[in-house]
Length: 297
Length: 297
Image 1 (cartoon, each protein chain N blue to C red):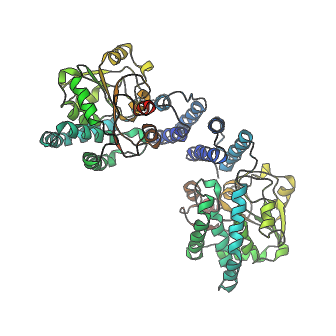
Image 2 (cartoon, chains in turn cyan, yellow):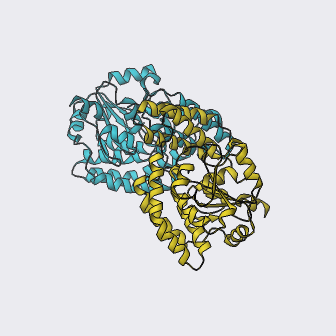
Image 3 (spheres, rainbow over the protein chains, first blue to last red):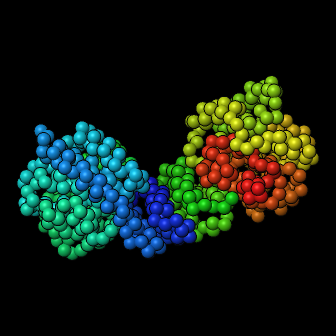
């Protein structure tokens, strides 16, 4: 998905909000904001939105010296999700369709996203509880669950691109429905917003369940040209890619290969691109991106 | 009032919204937005916010070739207000305190502001009717009406700085409570957002009531150094200045002379600077700006 004009005010809002979250020093906040404005004024709109997210957070790191501003939020969300894990696992196993229940819960976990500017640690627990309730019964935006089920059954090498800390515990519920030997879980190469890193995969118990690799980059999504050669090889070799969250959709929706996107739509621009409503839970089309599938219709 | 950091995302939002209002051509919208981002990245924060409003609308004029994008809105608001004028005039004359009622109505008219990004022609009538009802009974944020009354009684040369088209009809209700020979009404030197120009003063019947001059500039406020020498002389010579609206407050609040600011607070940053709440109706302190008065306490 490309950058739309309406992403620009949103980038500036994000830069402003994040700079205030990271520092009380108004001179630093001002430097961040000026640098982001200058960068945005020259931005190529043929890139995907997470390119700019990458730039914003690079500027924040440089100006504040804080390499991991969401460290505490990530720890908090991992603990929160792990506290719910035993009950949720029981719920999956006791349900009529454990696969579907696990998919729904993994998408519910996608609400733990500090990149959309509204979530705080304080509201994480209640927001998550409400989203879980909603996600267990809300109709999927597209009726693609059978396709995903079949793809998982048929695949021998599944690459699961994770999204956020905390959310990764919900991904675990879903991955527990797959043959462990077939799955490789992917984390980010370093801290970026509250995206899951190897540390979070360890905290979530993911590393004892399946193979975990990092993608070699610090982007809130998967920009292949910024990922490591090792990751790109894995990406090309996998016969099924499951990609969690908006950032992965934004950066991979136009990549020409079989990918299932699983996410909760939180941004109106992304929802429009997918062809769904904000709030919807999405399992994307036939392995192509929803917009590619739409174009092919 | 100086530019605060939180004004910056708001400037970018405004540029985006106005560019979409003026043209459907996305290439033009993009040029506007890029130019505003570049300008904002180098903005001096020692200026007042309307400096940036001035730049945004200059860029919009240059990029779109549209010299007066709010022309229709101004005509609409003048007609709307003139349609209400006879009844409102009766209400003023029949009230226990015509001066206070007229002040309240002139502040109610301040809601007709297309510069804050939320008003549309379609909602103008209902928003205005609701604001009138509210403004006739809502307590003033500061108890300064007696000071204003006394200042008007004592002054021989009152300079009344107008704000928006439509609103100017409500100013007329207030100015009708003053000796006509003592009042000079000030309009902008050319179209800027929906600020009142000489054309609006004529439409509102202001030119047949009092002397009307323009300030020689196209700024959504009164930046003295951008005004004509003739206006600056009038400004210095007047023994009372009444300034309507947020833009005049933002640009004149730190000018060292006796000014009464009359406005409805619509922006949280301005409300904080004044020391009131968003939604409040304000007659500022003892002729100094509210913040200057606060500093002097």
